[in-house]
Image 1: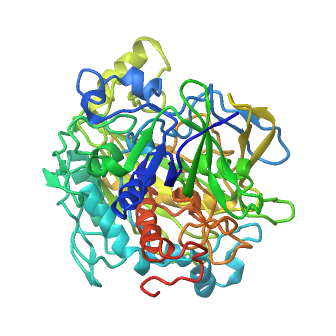
Image 2: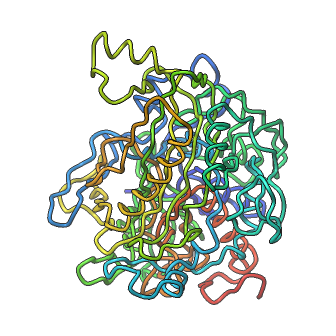
Image 3: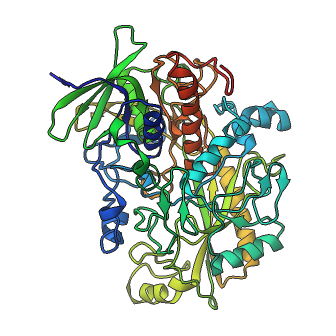
Length: 592
């Protein structure tokens, strides 16, 4: 029998970016908050200090601060015709575990989605006709616009100390920034990071071939900075240990560095190593009464709460909704149901360049250090006759080249032995990559549900992922690769090697930790799991922030939009919900 704890105003499942933001804003509003984190406690000091955090084997290879698939994983298949099998080790994506979640080991690439991304279905059908959207494509407009989210994008950037150069200030195009971005209300909090040789070469070639290069927006601080919560951040030291690692100097924005130190501890309690098993519902199944979780001692605990916030990793949010019976599960055969619908990912490719007479010092770098073009993203270019919609950005990134996992060699190099060693020595410091990062449109047969066979360590059905790249994704990615190849040729390398997106999609090699959808937001309960304020349609005191709310994935990394959506929802919660608990679907920002 579960031990019942003292009721609180709000319980938050997961303490990554969205969980931390919700904890901060709700305690500031006077609520008592308990956060339940499945992983261990950790902080910049002592967990991420030099001598420990720069352990590539422990953190990059053995995934020490990430989800443990021996206890909690998912099953995967490319199509409904196949039998899904468990993912036994992390590969294509790396969900976090522990305080800060995946926000600890992200790279810091901090984007705003394009204004057209939020109205994609209406935008492309109006411009290109209804036939441009394939019959099995389930894309839909977001229930919120760029203009509505802009103040919240800005708020999150001020919390993260984001670096960059504005390209559109209040409608005025600014040289040196991204001319395709939506209007910004003000400049980035910090100036861009220092450019590297590879970035300079890429930017010059991109400009000469007619494109518009600009510095990557980065939540790697370019200088010492005090953020919107009054927390001091250090300047990046370009150590090359960002992705898969915590930051030892608090230069990379992350929940434990940028939000949690500002929490009102008198109203907040954190319980780590607490695995939430389900959301508890009352007899009407229209109201949550709290959650049930397993603590570190293996004891079953019930935590009553007036508000439940599912702020776990996106895939885990969907899993908990399915396990708890919140919303109708999606059925791809009939098209009915909403929970699990519109799972999407990202699609990547690259042009790898080798130069006999260049030296790039690749061991130096930062997670979001790069030069980018956005000319082939979203609908920034004419898609007429191309056979696909949407796009992605193209980047020459300089993130650091660690010795175990980085050893690029040209095609034709022996796979092992003296010849391979000689090539690694020759090309380690003389190579760079132009990467493409593309959108993935939602499709009817890409979805999440509960596996009928396999269970996790707590006896619950595993989440099952059914996903493959579709014709639109492959055509779009190939187009991006051709642009990267064009710029690469203009850089005059000694060798160039293209790496196209793999098909069928494989869950084995790492690609991105950008899983989206499954609990999508919308303005109609028949086609979405949560409303425009991330409130579950069926259970009004449950809120589900995170990338699980994306109706489809854009060409950018999701974290900037995840943070903006959290602040957007919290504005409505504090303004309206706390005064009158109940459905918010009729509320409009700025009105009672």
